[in-house]
Length: 148
Image (cartoon, rainbow, N blue to C red; front, side, top):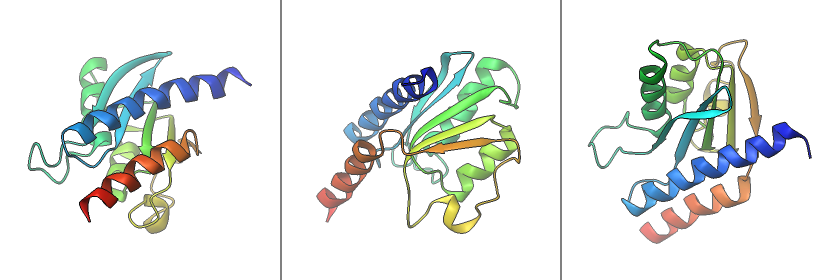
């Protein structure tokens, strides 16, 4: 296995831990980490219920935290790892922040950005998908199954 694949799995596992934290708070279990120069500079999970804010998605929380750590709004040399494909709102924020790379685990067939605006990301942003797809997908499916 390449070093990139091993790193992607490690960092997605960290995003998965964040998703589990969201689930413990009865939030939709989506987690995110942002990595710069091989280290995590932001960790976040969905907080829409906790904050009563529809924009408090894991990615939005992580982008804000990473910008604060780096002291600037652009995250050009950073990678965002998220357990579920970003929605169009989050994809727009990812584009504005100019993240170099996005890695997501599970597709979101109902609300994912690829369904609505597949070209929304910054043209230089590289995208990888499917890292820990089964585990992340199952976490979300089981969450919604328990709500019905």
